[in-house]
Length: 626
Ligand code: ADP
Image (tube, rainbow, N blue to C red; front, side, top):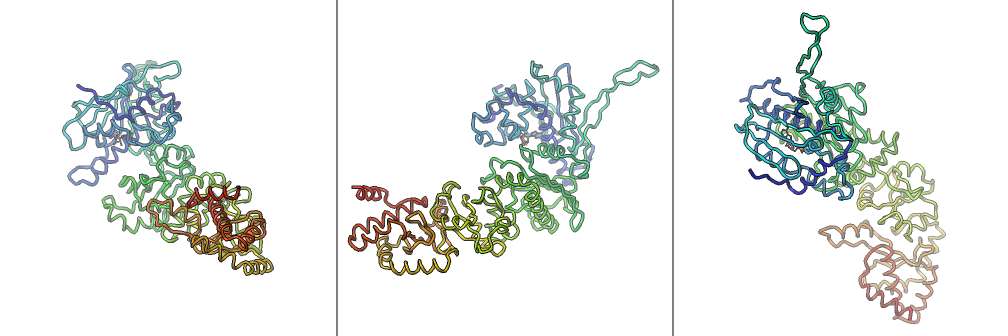
């Protein structure tokens, strides 16, 4: 028989598993039991909904058996089983492909990181075994197959005998080493406690043969071993339990057991709703961003149960996109078991549940914001972009619902502030909420445009995320205070006196500005006296809705539509450069051209915009120097 090779990525993962020095190897049992439970879910559902089958609850269980002498540990289930193809596809390739390439090689030399970050399902069996054998018979098939592997070299598949549908996982447990006591995984007592610890809430019975000493019949002090099959898990799903009975650890274990994430959840939300709709739910806000979160591959959704029976793995209709990071499950008696996906979308109960859940999540996030700021900061770092996107999405239809969850970095202390906090501490005469857009906070701080606003002592929100300015444009205002970019034409700060002064300067220099505008040939809407510049000679500002920062973002998009912001070239008439300009205007047309183009290009560079002709720019510089 020819041995088959694992796919490259699986092979690497297996290698890591085999040589792993991961300290919680016991989790392999949780992973196997969880797979078994999933496969029973599928069978159970079929059994309940297929009229040709006679349903019998007794048929569903998982059995863990240890044979110390031969170092064999078995996990057997009465689930849906796997066909030959499924054995190949499911066990020959790692399902979570991409998780490996996501991590840099050197970050996971000993396999620790990958296990902690992603979990590894079935392959974790290789952490504790020399040989892994899977014997499976799929529902609807009359043949059974055996899959066997000793590690990264490859695996064999052959036909075999198995009487009932389901899967047996058979592990040849490794010999003890100096650092590792593998015997633990053959010992009845420790196996029992591992099952209790990680898999207590599995809703199917997990059976084990438990040995007890009993008084030998007819004697008074002679004992004999008595073996009895016992169910060792409580089987009550965690969501049916009272919150007061549960500890944080219980929720964390549930989170790992369900593979909602491989981090620890930042927060759990346990809902027991008993009003208009009746449902139980356990929701989690993860601490870390799932590696594929901001990609197209990421699928949002909650597990959906109808009275304890899983009917859908990822019910998308239960979560709005802006809360797509939430993981968890919902169980409701009010949902029919046989409902189809299409009908479910329109189900009134489901809609009510979704609305209810959405409000609960927001409430929880607000409470995090108000009571556990550090956790909220963490949350926002991971998922804030999604919230901002939610504000913008759908022409702002959810903006009122989400605006209190927003935070931005503020010029004050460089800390994240909510809009409410910003508005609360605005000085009375300040009319607007000011913001500045740029690539990084450091770059924003150097922008000439912020001079006037910061000299006034006003706080400025730093927008460094692509979505920021778009979100705020949709919001328009917060608590009746409008948002204002520091680059916008009218900052609403100038005193009347100054206003008049710059107006007269504007008039005085009308001709020169007109001339400059012509030199720049429609590249700018206007050339004007700057009201905001103090130290710098020039800057660009913009008129209209589309800002320069937005222009940059839009033109970086794949199918950009060449949109341009209406730019205004602002000149600081108090700067020495301006007298040279004036001089050139009066005496030397060529020089005025040279200066104007130079200043314009400088302003572009300051904005981080590309200049049209870098060679010409360089030539002009040389001309001035020589
Ligand atoms: P995951 O469970 O995260 O998908 P695993 O590596 O643990 O990844 O399992 C891969 C696949 O193998 C599962 O998705 C499932 O289809 C199949 N599988 C594993 N164990 C069993 C089992 N006991 N019964 C039926 N199918 C199983």
